[in-house]
Length: 99
Ligand SMILES: [Zn+2]
Image (cartoon, rainbow, N blue to C red; front, top):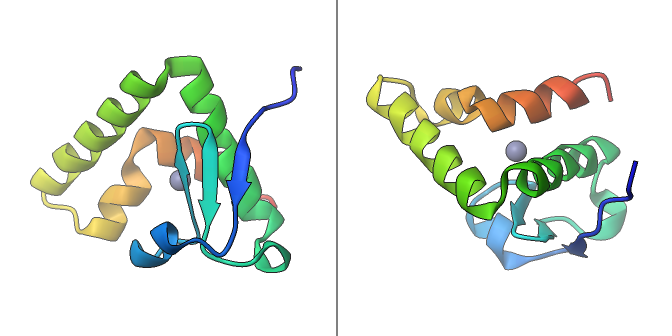
């Protein structure tokens, strides 16, 4: 399998503002922690989003992600439950649960 190409930024304001450990935007993964404090599980999680973006393309990924989240919120779920129920997140959590 081809190695994934992506950039990483540590100790970044963007995930900190969003109160998340990491966020993947286009080909860059932004982590709130410094490199030594970022877990292998979180790195693997964000790498799955990189793979999803490579497979589906940016437009489909972000559009579907946002729409799925909004649909889940409209259906009555709170933020955390809606976030964890987004199919892209379910795949990422499902594949990293063992780590
Ligand atoms: Zn995620």
